Image (cartoon, rainbow, N blue to C red; front, side, top):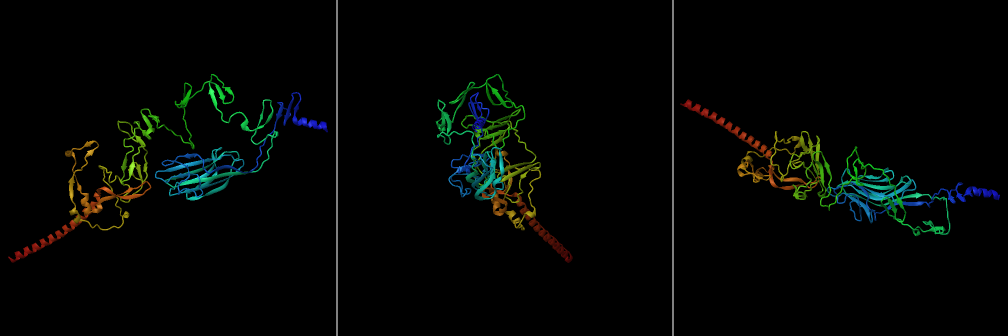
Length: 570
């Protein structure tokens, strides 16, 4: 039996006596001691945390296209806002707020896993709150994202447009080994907001006994130790921090020598090969930079990434972005003043930038010029548009089409969609066919016969006058050339026909559609509203004329009868 055992040992070990080589797991050893095998690490199984985030030391990572907010996008907070904080939020949490005029939030917070799943099922839980005000397009959603495949995993975990303050807990199927993140997307325009806290992602694995190709038990082995040797080649296990080297090393290049800190120096290959830089990239004296001629159609796919141009505000003349046409600059920025100009004129911000003014409701606003259209000092700048256009500014919208322009919505009240204001008047309005006033009876209510008439017309004071302000631009019109006007006094009409005098106006309080009634600084007159009174006066006069005509006719008849009696008596 002993010879047979020796044969078996030799077969397993693969001893090559001629070369003094011993192989384990191979019959063809190529070294003095050659081990071949497959190592499968084991694990203890149980619940493993892939992500445990309470945001105490979290740095916001997001896909953000928010504008006009005090904080554009998500933020970490310890206070947040009562209208959007979740009941379970504690310590620090992430929060997004759109509760301010002009704020449009559209941002996705990204929370990456700290470990990749080893199994195919994970458990996800988190606390959240979403509070909606009125916006039809506002929403909050949460979903799992596979960073490895750059795609969403399954359906949304949360997708809501109405108020909720609750928690999510569920399981999701995943691919073992892939990298994942949880993403929280919020969109809100002048709305309340949302919050998220206490994220926990776990997986449950089964214990696995590992198998190994090599084991050395010398009494020094411990978890995390490395196999080392002394100068004589004696091997043992030692802590990793006792071994020479450093975790952080610097790589440097000098000429064609690449050196690694505390390591070797490698000589890089040299040769006479050349490189071609084209399609918007050029090389000068060994430096490669942007700049050059495109030789083909080129597209930059942004996907979920932003392309941002920035400048230093500390520079005296920071760089700008310029588009050159054949004859002039098509567009030039003035990043120092946050301004852009189209048309070739220098992008100089108007001198009124930053000045304040009062609207019709006496609210103070600051002029903030953001863009200009200027072809230069010669004049003639034109802005071309399509056949149907829309101009939108908060509460007001203008609609342009081939036959003219109008407000977007039909306005049947006397207040909305005004052309000019009581404190911002047009000097003159020219029209071929006059002004058409809506007078359809179906739009009217509480219709009554007009009580005004001749009596009131006789009380109206008619005047001729000249306007006090006779300045046109920088020109003062001489008194001899000033036009004399005829009309009425608004103050006089207010005592006789108060309905034709405009004393108050309804003006926008803000851009959410709220209006307030304010007193005008100057009085205005609805001249066309005097026409019905004048017509009523004419009608009353006609009645008097008809009555007088009847009286005259009767007197003539009586006079003829008297004349006849006198003749007969004589």
